[in-house]
Amino acid sequence: MRHRSAFGALILVPMLLLAPCGVSSQDHAEGTRKILTTVAPQYPNLARSMHIQGSVKADVLVAPNGTVKFVEVKGGHPLLAQSAQNALREWRWEPASHETHETIELKFTP
Image (tube, one colour):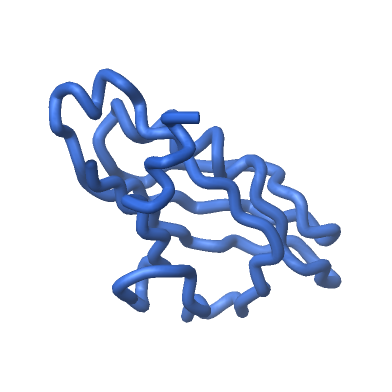
């Protein structure tokens, strides 16, 4: 599948700890939950054809059971934001005793 091959060019980076690739632990006041499952966003065809790249930052509200309750895009190119939001809704975190806010940055490079 051609869209899935974009994952190799996609770098998932926590907002505060910029790592060259992969997902590192996050560092913010509310505590960090371990990410159990990630889903790579599909690189939108229009963004690819226009050579649009960049990061999408989002605040993810994670339920106690580890599922995503809400995703709010905090910044990034509008052509990339919807794809990032759709993928983040599929992510899963480890269970916890309460809801948490996780800040995630997805980096798109063609």
